[in-house]
Length: 200
Image (cartoon, rainbow, N blue to C red; front, side, top):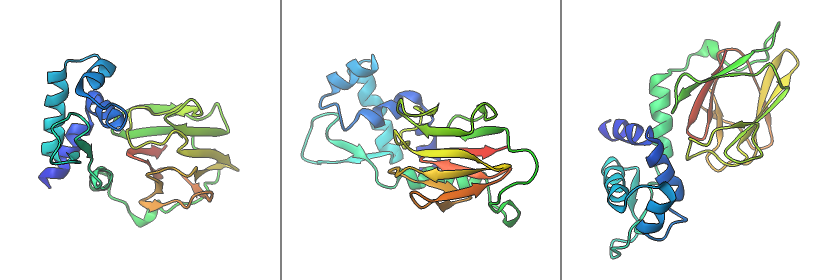
């Protein structure tokens, strides 16, 4: 339980999410510090805290190079999603369905940056991801793919499609099969990588 809370706290920091994203691309602490505009000592301090929380692990015990001796812990995404599900228990009455009446008008982000609300009324299709392809970019999530998912107006409701993302899209905890459109209704809980949102 402690590891879950620690991992969630560590990932709430934008700097640590950026470190997690840049680990595979920066071969030295100096390069990583320059990319983040912080000192090498600060980089090492963040990495030490991430290691203690289990967000990263030692990739090569014999190496003393930083940051290449670290890699993202394989179970980090699982911790994030477990934390989301503990915070937002699911119930049978929120089963996915196409709504009748007016289409849901907004998407409320619940984690990792709670409180952000996106007005969906201006488009019939929203592309969710990290890259320039996205019409709803979520660069704060290190588990988000560049082309992660698409949210489409579907009659009087919405549907969600996973675009082959690395960490998947889930509706009420159930993973969406790539290329399959799943209808979603009001109060549907959606997880895109490590981002949790609710239609409202």
